[in-house]
Structures are given as structure tokens and as C-alpha cells.
Length: 104
Image 1 (spheres, one colour):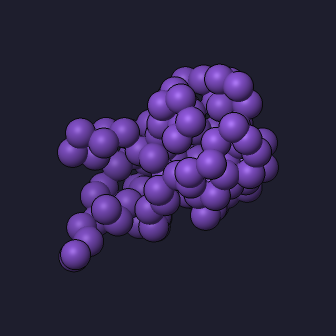
Image 2: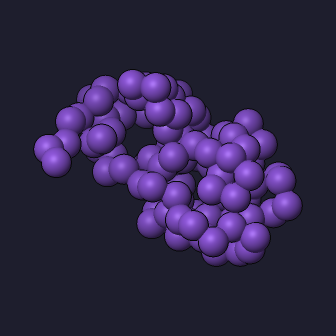
């Protein structure tokens, strides 16, 4: 299936260690700034469908959901700590002139 590149928010609007949610055609995608590198992934926890931006905490490359503590690797989407078993879907990100673009 062909991918499409979607322009989202300014990179400078997401501080290091920050999370931001964007809506891409009805799908909420989270963007994390990990030491100046941006990662995009599905915004809902795969365990309880909670918002990882509103209820999560980013520490390094891991985001932890406040609902029962599942943790995910924002770089690859993998579940790092139970009770989550399913990974997050991740999306390629690039920065063009301070604008984040996500491939969906």
C-alpha cells in the first residue's frame, strides 16, 4: 500500500522530552521528542486504549501509560512492560524546515 506524507506541527513546538498529539485523518498519532529526535506512534495504549499523551509519561525512549503502567518503546513501538502485549504502530518522521512530516 502506498504511503502518504502528512505535514503536522512545528518541531520547535515540541520540547525535548515532550509529547504532542495530532489528528491524521481521524487517527490520533503521538509525536515524541527524544533528545532532539522525533518519533511518531499511535497515541492510544494497546492495553486500555488510554491516551499516552494526556495520561502517559515519556522517559528517554519509553512512554508509560498511567493506566496500570504498561510501557512502550517509542522508537520501535514494542511493549516493554506488562500488562500490554501488543506493540504500538510507529510511523516514519522527518523534519523539513522545522515542520514535522509523518508517513502514513
